[in-house]
Image (cartoon, rainbow, N blue to C red; front, side, top):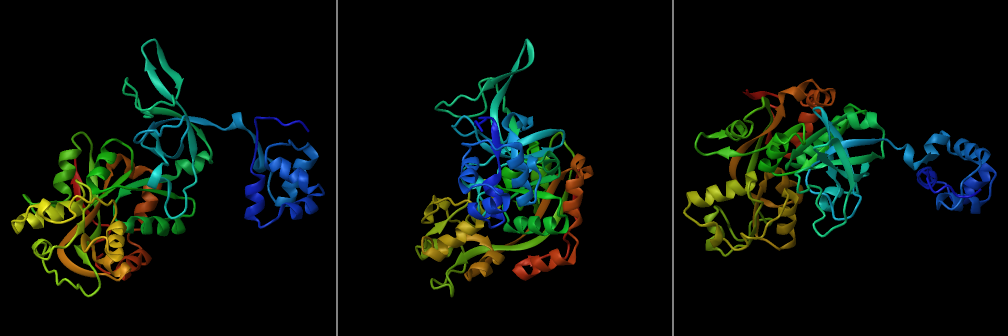
Length: 402
């Protein structure tokens, strides 16, 4: 049958997921292997009879195998960050408050360990127009490649590639601790219909995302030297027109990661300069970077005196891998990361890690389900076995910001 260029199919992905070869599927469905190959490559549109046979052989509905491209629903979404240079881009989607947020799957954001499946693809940027409600213009493939135009818009049109009910049932969390991804997986096991979208961001960046309405929850571990408080002063300053609560995950040990046995004999941050140690540092605005700067200041050591202080890494795992590989002699991270990588650890500070949640989101079912898991003993056990965490107050509301 002549190919319909608008006809799409999932035949190969469903077949391979079931462990079938093209020949095995052809034998069961009573067709030729060449026909299977032609359909999978989009070179051949199957008849109604063949479509029914293929669906029966694979144990699914015809609609699961074939669809018209124009049948995919589209939504308007606010783009979190900049669009990539190509005309269309893969995104994850979630409903935050009363709007859809699209998160570009670009670079490291496109992966956990494996590549993250897309929820949709951007089709166009939506520009406000004084004479119309909106005017849709195709995304230009230009040198800048950013979704944000001179008019300041960051709204995009997204074609969905997944079930919209699944996307509605998503909670989005930004933060830097690997514990958040652990909690995400535990919550999804406890609530199989819930999806946790974890976005890696240091504390200040996570808080900014929360203020912009891009995430439901921000994780942070910032210490204010003026008040001696964790997180609360920073949230009060940032959330000028919104109400929020802070729920603690616990207290973790922060300090210097060093090679096993601490061969240099480092005891304090000033030793880093004295012994000529090379370090890696986190981004400005991260809790770990602020801790390093504070401890150096207390000992009267300028940051630029420490070798490698301009070498920026973006996660706690990157710090550990830098020490393990010999790229660095030390770096700021947590006791649990030191344990996971078999490294030495020099404690410097006990920091409280809190989750900041806009109050209006507390009534949303995905957020309720995520928070319900915090007090579960299985979650406590997962954190306790990591080491370096005090979870005695996990789930406790530590501040109410109005």
